[in-house]
Length: 451
Image (tube, rainbow, N blue to C red; front, side):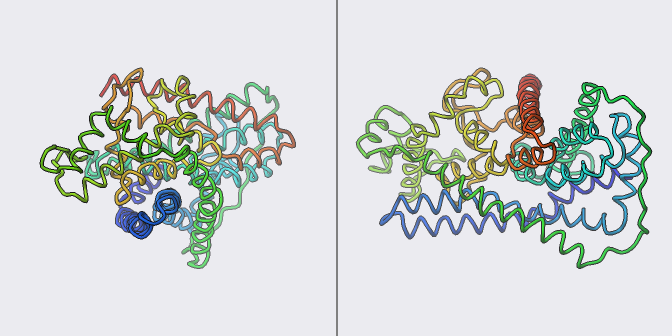
């Protein structure tokens, strides 16, 4: 029953939230377009910072507010009904296989919202070794910060009408990702308990069962409100600051018209767009949908996208992304994904903000749709220039990387406060990043062979 409820839970996240998400995305796209229309001619730098950096970056994260609301609404209802306590009690036997008890499940379940309250919930565990094992496992539980990444990439990889029997394929993929995180958390706890040589007898688990009852609307509303407020607050502080820094790194050093003209003369695609802008009837240019573009306004947009792409390809951020390319290339990543991954080491949501910023700079009106059409700019170990960047193998590698990697400095800080040492946060960061790289690389090559 528990697994059935969780399965339907993820189906609802996609089905119910889709129209609201489209409306929010359309609203931010409209705002970004207005900023460019107002400021492009007089203040192009400010237009880029506001339209692509802030609205494109932060807006791409806030687009997932409908999913956050639905997720916490269902969790709050299940908790208010009295079901979650019973789920914890039923999981006690399963948790014991990892050397933990039912109280550890409560801590791990709390980590579905955020790993920080999950780590703090380990205070209820009587054994110090149980607390450490649970702390090192808690970040593997899929927190709400991963949700925007999962939803974005799953939406690109899986068509909206794809189904597995009567169920939506997108919701099934989401359920599998959450299940993979939970199973991995259990495996990590088991390994830690064996390495720390627990010994002794596992203590019995006691929990008071609340009666089944109708949830209190006020309590449900407060839980949803607190979750959304925390998500928006994070977007308004950490993500906003990060997107501003990234916008600067993606646009510095600035390129002159003479440098762009020289680049365009040596680049066939850019040269054809420039020629079409000068004489629309003399050249043929195809858009993302492979249809010939003849409208002067659309041609101007394509040329502006070429300028933006040229600037980004030669920016400081691109140099940083290309510097780590040897490490991340086996995963199928290019410098744009590398930059997004590096930014996500502080907070996971900045991955979406970074990609949203890059896509919004080239297509302010439909940045999410533009991500699906982006291509590799040069050959990699498993891809050739011109292949789709977000192909199934690469998307699967990114998803698996986010399942295992610890990309949250706040979580490391909470672990430091609870253990009184930086030893365990350092161990957590190291083992999770290594595991993420290995598992993502394996996933990349397996999917590449199958597809």
